[in-house]
Length: 419
Image (cartoon, rainbow, N blue to C red; front, side, top):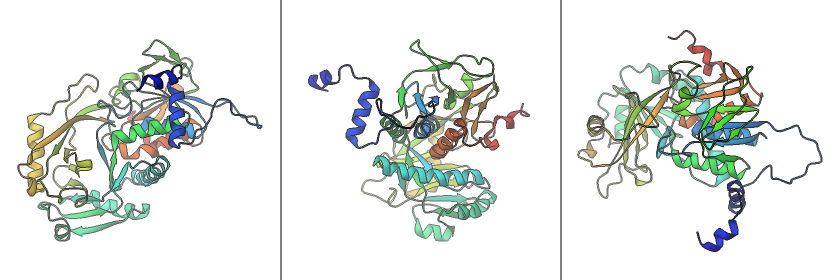
């Protein structure tokens, strides 16, 4: 930045700079200081959201749009390399077996992804379709079909012969049949988290890149947060969407509320001048035949993504080193070369170590803290949460502001009888 520009901005707060930039970029701003209203308004709810990942960022944005005075806090920023929401891409698809609640949430999230893409004029969702490969034990896939139809997801059932004609790059050995989803695809993960923050700031939200620790509840309420810069923050309501750190903040709620597992992701190089492994020629894919692998064919030319969905070993998201293992690479390569024979010998271009933040039953957590009526716990993405961020944020904002009760399906009571 040039010296004159620095002098011009001297004395302006971070929030003011973002607002000024937002106006220049065409974002609509809300709640500007000095605005007048002829009608008296009730005091705005003050809400603090801790965690700027897929769940926390969208929650903060929805709260702000509903009129709450909202502050968003994150230790390293949205889409950072330690976050479960970091990384280049995440799949969005509607196939969810018998779990109607998630199928409906994906449908709602897809609406919100498209709506906010248009609002922000940023492409975050890439519609390239999805192949779901069913094995001999295909009860999960059969249960998905009526729910996909009910939710309005365009899809077809294909035999492996038909699928092989459409996508000859894939070896369908061991696959029983295939679901093809037309509206599925992938999301630009870390960039989406950053876009949500930019939209949040443009509409009048406040963001602080700090760590937060709750002060113990008093008489059934949380009174304040201690921040890593030594300050204290007070609010009417608090939302903790801390991903793998949720259980560390609240060990009194339940031991091992969230378990973090180490997950390895690999990006392989495709043959020179060969576009048959690009997203123009292949959809995203989830292979549920013998061992669940999934992948994305070359987003933004970063390579052919291959990942194993099997839960890895326990992992510390703060201090764990993110180096791939030779065993993980060998397993991914063996699978890729079997299912995509044209990629035999493909070089490894990049790798990434992230983590799943798993609940005990792999379902999300959306509930009040059992000892603080104004504190909310949101997490348990369990490796499938990113796509649901917009709908989760909407539901949490409604619960926090008293518009709707949280769904018991996501409540903490389900863990009471678990050891």
